[in-house]
Length: 137
Image (cartoon, rainbow, N blue to C red):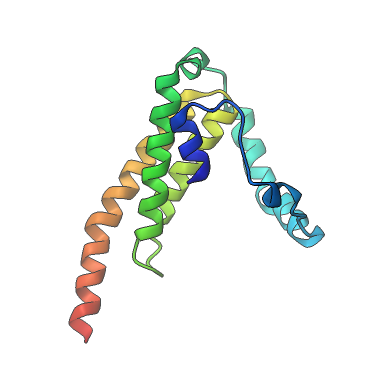
């Protein structure tokens, strides 16, 4: 959420609190990250291109991606627990983030579409999940 707000206000460099920057990541966590996530990120990097990269130079694009990211993070946070409905909004955030980092707005817009589908899923399926749980009691 912090990074989304920074995009909305137009920051060009990421600001993190000092204690977060000083925090060390354990060797076990780094190893798990390298084994699980890095191959997927490398695959996306290989297929990502700087298509329409000029769009990222406009402040509006950063504000748009920031606002959408914030909405998706809030949606994932508010999704009913243990339903898996937070997956699509979270994937949308990851793709938007990679789109900004890799300067590929198309990847960011793909994240926007996937995230929007996730918002709809949280709204409609989440409502049904809550309804089912209430009927149990």
